[in-house]
Length: 108
Image 1 (spheres, rainbow, N blue to C red):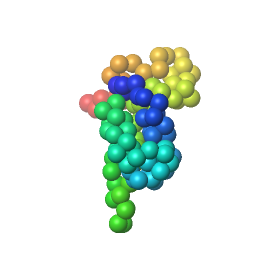
Image 2: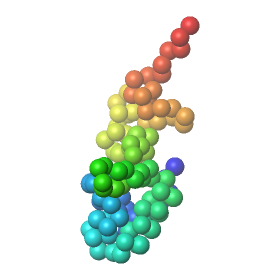
Image 3: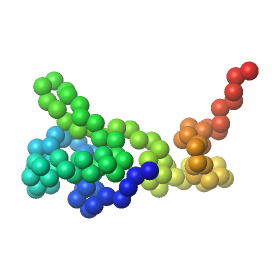
Image 4: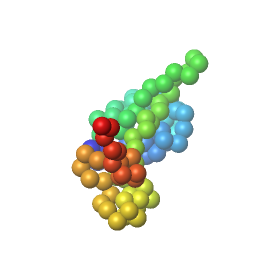
């Protein structure tokens, strides 16, 4: 479960979702110091966001890892899929695939 974020951390998350940024780039976009940008990434991670550091060639950057369960819970369009099926959005312990396509049948 994700913890609530400060407004600055939410802004940092949007920037990280939008592009190929390292700490310097994030700091420049947000108008803060490198140390503040680094702390914001730490806050995102502590808040449950999946932020990874990836090396592409000689350059490092942050990437937001796919978090389909969080998307399912936080995206209003994705949440409506459950209502179209005349059921709850997502039962506790239910995977997104099971909610969309129905539970898998167990092999005999």
